[in-house]
Image (cartoon, rainbow, N blue to C red; front, side, top):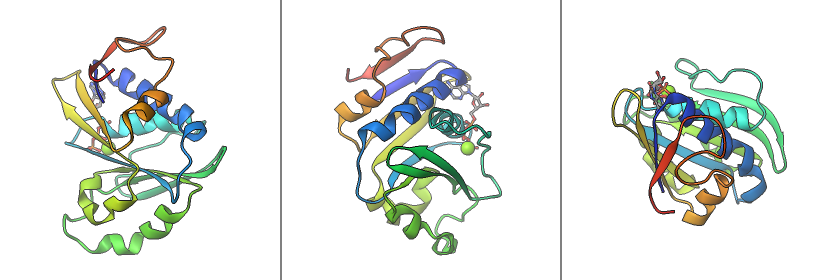
Length: 179
Ligand SMILES: Nc1ncnc2c1ncn2[C@@H]1O[C@H](COP(=O)(O)OP(=O)(O)OP(=O)(O)O)[C@@H](O)[C@H]1O
Ligand SMILES: [Mg+2]
């Protein structure tokens, strides 16, 4: 599924929609792990901040530029922890990620994990439940491509938000591929 957003606010709102509905739909073995890819400034953190709001996290989720792993306790059905991980500072083929405890984080079904720059740890891709890619179209537009879950499931996560625009308020956005 692809969505083109025309403002940061809309990217945030799509994240928020997913954050608010994800716990009720997905039962998983191991953690629910979403990998985010896309160039600098493509919207990964904006989207993750929306997810955090949708999960009911009150404190601002800053981009963990220096702190690679941020943990937030949550109370959402099967989930008790939200992890926001940003691997930008890891060297491409570095070994440092062995020290981050990722295997343990990825193995706990009570964890919901969103990882910016997931492409730096391709060796962990078997843990992925979803892969979301962000592309810059121009100053205000981003193309967001959702992969790795059955298409119906992504649509379920965004239900109540009709293709072509949100039900009310906010800027319009459009699904450019699929329904
Ligand atoms: N449609 C849009 N969706 C998301 N962000 C947008 C959009 N249009 C403009 N922006 C701007 O693009 C920037 C996105 O920054 P953000 O930190 O979310 O990107 P990022 O992918 O996390 O970058 P980095 O790789 O540096 O972590 C923000 O300044 C935001 O205001
Ligand atoms: Mg970021």
